[in-house]
Length: 64
Image 1: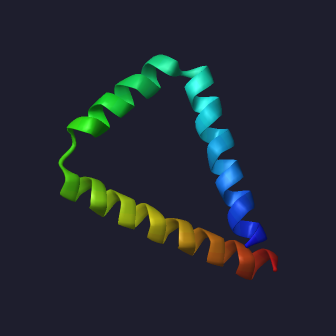
Image 2: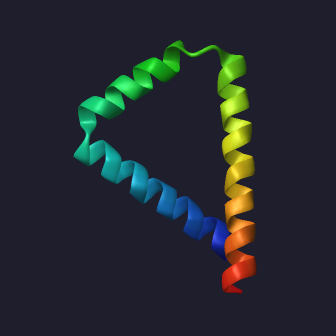
């Protein structure tokens, strides 16, 4: 549970930094995302989640 909360905090920090550093690009990305079909969004979301789980697993294996 501790790792999950830390990961969520890190994701919020990165997103916040991106919004602060590149507000125009973030706005364009959000507008583009709102035009993307829902099925594609689901696929990208599932692939991103799977990639995240793989990265966490590899890091835990390699770094203990």
